[in-house]
Image: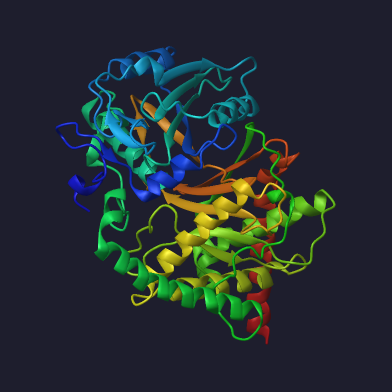
Amino acid sequence: MDASALFSSRPNKEGRMTPVSLSELVFLLFESDNNPLHVSCLMVLEPPKDAAEFAGELLEAALKATPVAEPFDLVIDESQFGLPQWRRCEHVDLAQHVRIAKLPTPGDRQQLRELAGRIHSARLERDRPLWEMWILYGLESQEIGLLVKFHHALADGKGVASMLEQSFRLSDSRKRFIPFWQLGQSIGHRDSSIISLSKLTSPRFWYQQLDLSVGASKLFAKACASRLHLLKSPIKLPFSAPRTPFNSYQGSRAKKISLATLPKARIRKLSMLTGVGELELMLTLCDMALHQYLQQHNWQDRDPLVAMVPLYHPQSGERMHMISVGLVELGRPAASPMQRLKKISQTYGKLRTQSSDEQVMEYNRYSALVNIVSLLAARYDSQQILPPAANMLMSQVDAGTEPLSLMGAKLKQTFPLSLLLPGQTLNMTLLDYHEQVHIGLVCCRQSLPGFDSFALYLPECLEQLEKSAYDSLLSAIAG
């Protein structure tokens, strides 16, 4: 997509304020102190041996990195008719956006996770541009933590990964720190289907929505018929997920994060062995780990969990707009690893074929409406009358295969930290970087006690799935 179109709903070069898009409006309206809607990324850097003051040098370089380019100089203005607009900030005080914090002794990884969790829990202030960068030092390993936060109205996970990768590459090639806030419109991604509020007054717009709504209604009818066992359809009926601890949100703003890594080579090899896509494999591993967590906490349920997953265009592979998600029914609690993998692969595969060229816009609109209704129900259904739309949200980001560095410091790990939608207590995001799958999990601190153990379950589940796949292969050969 041409860079000039990336922020078409944002202020133009003359600084004229313009309304936010509908997708951006959703994330702005549904945000609260207990449900901040931003995404973060926690990176672990290994400074050079002779760079004892690396954290201070990085802070100094960051505070001098001006001017700030659009969209990182934009603030939300809600003065006119109560509708948000993007307004350019004449002066961005970088001291309000670039922070530094020292870990208490001994400075282990658990303390890094705790501090990152507290930072990720805090809502971004709307009286200034909606982003922050934190430099975290004091680790006993001499490593440096770098945490960045962006409001979801400003960027999604893929956009954040692209921004950071380009910042690292430019900084490395030019031998000086070039932060993401100086890159501006040259990076990021915005879907052409994102609608500006100004289009709401156009008759043509409403005619198009009516046409798409007919197709979306047909998809909803298919989901209902599938629920009643009248026909087979990959479309999962909304609000039919079992209620589990992953939906018992306690209304606390405190979030807890858990981090895990898996070798990319083993995932790739398992994908080739089973003929199943890597995302379906990761869904299976996470499903196995979630059921192991539920068993450890004496939770029994006969129904399979339901995951929200992002939708991708069937031809281009690009992510559909930020509020489009699909519902994937996972494996039953008692299923074996291979049974679980087969079920998830079939369900997700059929969901992808549903987004064909003829139906992609209808399904895009249908899924967006389902997500918005889910948000409304979670926000206003305080008595939890409706069943959950899903039990967890899972997404995937690709950060590239080549190793990155910043001012001589090697980027060792990079963990995506996503948001918790209203009514959800668990979100997991996968990020591929340098032959490792980095998994960032965010959960409500009060709702899921002992969730740190989830990071230990994942490697165990990978071993179980590998063994099950090899046993199935040997049985097929022997048979």
